[in-house]
Image (cartoon, rainbow, N blue to C red; front, side, top):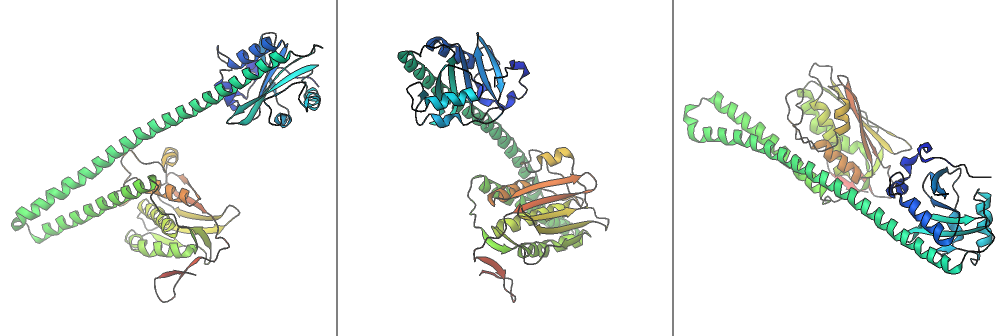
Length: 422
């Protein structure tokens, strides 16, 4: 068996070779080539190989040129080192290692192997070899080992710097989004307060000039605006608490029907007002393991959102369904409303930095509800996704862990609305 050498431009899976690209594999400052060439010259070998365990290719250096070699199988080369940083002819497993390399296509008479480490774990090996009969100089072997350790330390620093740089860029982007997001929120809060202050002033100073109809109109406006502004503040507070990790996550086994029944009772009046059928088809005795308060909030938010965007023509519906699968308990909230575009679906769980869309009855939204849903589902080790077609409706899917074998189960008291732990 011999190695099949490829030119670098023939290697079509280089994107999977992160460490190699980090070392400038395809740049003018190819540190892999420099490392292998320096090691060869130092030890007096004719060929060299650098292999990272998790990458698709390894790199073969001979005659001042580097080639890619596709790994045909994953080989555990690090098993031979036994806590040593290099393998030479004095190593107790040298003969086994040499035979193993020959079998893999690395044909040689003499060979030296260096263990490439990151955070004290082996991430690859470097081989220096040829078919010369004379053994390598022991002094040069020790210098080569030092060269390998320096390379490992450099690689670790380079990798950590790259990770920190990525985290820094992500944090900068996140901070920019939050700053813009809060500027929108501030604007959205300021606008309703202008109306509240203005109409309050009219009531306080010009009440004697108004008839009962005008007073009622102003009262209705003040109530609706106060309610929507309060909802915005409440959502903003919950979102900030979730982002700060200050929510208390208390998972228990509970009957999913308990949560959906609460939601149906709370939102049924709104559904009737909008002439929308609100359907609960969640099976009895289907239990999940989650925080009941968070899950009830998620379901209420999703159902409220579905009602918001379902038409008022008398044919609209919002349905809750659930089933047990291998993945967990799958919950579906389906409507036949306005639907969403591909762009809306791709950003639906992100904090909105633009004004929220109005519902079919002119309802306002803060743009935070689905962000909170995603956060709560993540806290409960679940998944949430959306599928939709513009003009035909939307389905939100939530997957939650099944109830465990523990005895802590939430049950409803027959004669009251209270709940207890059994």
